[in-house]
Amino acid sequence: MMPFGRKRRKDPELDRDQSLSAKPFLDRRVKVERADDGTVILQVPRRSTAMMRTVSRFFRVPPYRQVALDELGTFVIELCDGTHTVRDMIDKFAERFKLNRREAEVSLSSFLRTLAGRSIVGLLIEEADRPGR
Image (cartoon, rainbow, N blue to C red):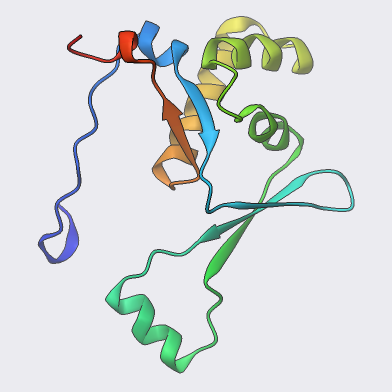
């Protein structure tokens, strides 16, 4: 249940092949910075809710939150450019970190699902791959 009666748009369900053919891309509002060790720090804009605006009046809350990624997360974010499919990313991830394909698929899919849920990445789905077409 969404608070205050907000309705969330229901995204279409994708089958496995459609999901693997999708091309993840970084949300344009997310800023990427490099840490000294080469990993990535994402600056993700906060959602502008009534509660957030109220809290911001009384406390100095930055308009973004920072998400520091480790080596694996950095590798994945660098591939989220809208040109690599999830299938390509799985193959590169498995090769780079010496995982079998199934382990790489489970790990990468879970991570991308988390990033998408936090509005950090989106999925570009080709018109022919869309559900119901």
